[in-house]
Length: 118
Image (cartoon, rainbow, N blue to C red; front, top):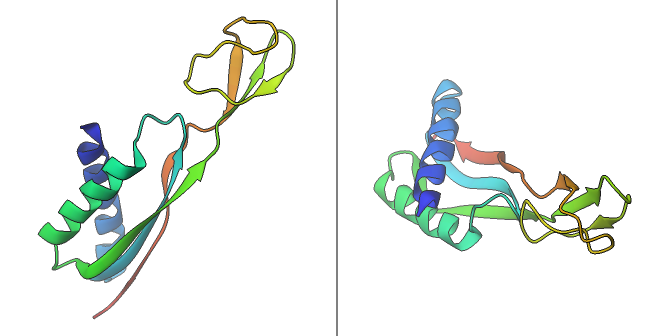
């Protein structure tokens, strides 16, 4: 499950920024996760819970992870039709050619986090 590794990297970035700002009680982390980013939201939530419970010196015991799903959209470079792909390489529903340019849906980033100086 690569979500453990992804969440570890995300929380490392959050922790570094929080320490720089003298924040030591993180209560919320918000992510943007694209539908075709190869990250499973449920697995990310589970990984977050594990990291939170192992790092109560940094996270509030009820800290929450909020995931904003980004819809996947692509545009065929041959016929110009926009469609919703289910994977990064998908056939255009109009011309049946795998020539889609991904417009949205691949994002995986921290949107924000909240905490205090307690």
